[in-house]
Structure formats: C-alpha cells, structure tokens
Length: 145
Image (cartoon, rainbow, N blue to C red; front, side, top):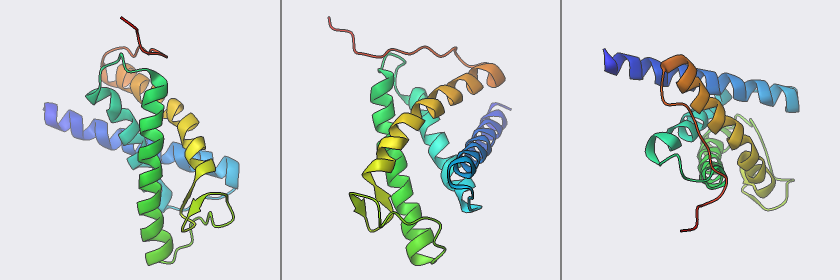
C-alpha cells in the first residue's frame, strides 16, 4: 500500500509541476508545447526531491542553486532531443547572451534560480498538506558554530 501511495504521490507531483510550468510559460510567452508538461514535471520532481535527500537545515539559497543547475541540465538534454534531434523548435535561445547551442543560456539559468524557490516551497507544502509529510521549515544561511 505504501508503494502505491509513493507512486501516486510522484505522479501527482509530476503532473502538477508540469501543468504549473506550462501555465507559467503561457503567461510569459503566450504559448507552450505539450512536451513542456514532461520537462516541467521532471524539474518539479527534482526540486521537490531535494528535501527528501538533504536535511532541512540546508539554506534555501543553496537548494535553489542546486535546482537551477539541475533544471539547466534537464533543459539542455530536453533541448538537444526536442529541438535539435526531433526538430520541434520548442525554444531557441540563440539570440540570448551566453547561450550554449541555443538550448540553454545564463539569463534563464538565473530565472530558474528564482523560480526554483517557488517549486521547492510548493512541493514541500503539497507533500505536507496532501500527503501528511513533515511541515516544511527553511533557513536562509548556514549556522556558524
């Protein structure tokens, strides 16, 4: 029964994160692509899993850096598959500064840093409210002993 609950929780969070990502993209770009449900879902799960692996005492800004790097990596892999290999042209950052092959760029990595805070906190509270997990708590800097 516990395994089924974990599967349901993962599916729920994946779909929730994918849909929220598509909604954000619709608000800012005016359109999205169905594949972004999968990319957004993977990124949301990755951000959410952070507090399942690391202690709550890790400062939120450090968690955000880890998430931004992970999201940028997912975006690069997804971009290479969707945009380069399959020619779907879902996005193109070629005109953005400090881009790599038009698939990732520094300005969007910075954006992922800030958006990851929303993802981390949203995931933690969904886990708490819906699945009865531990109430989230955050720190913003490391304690100096």
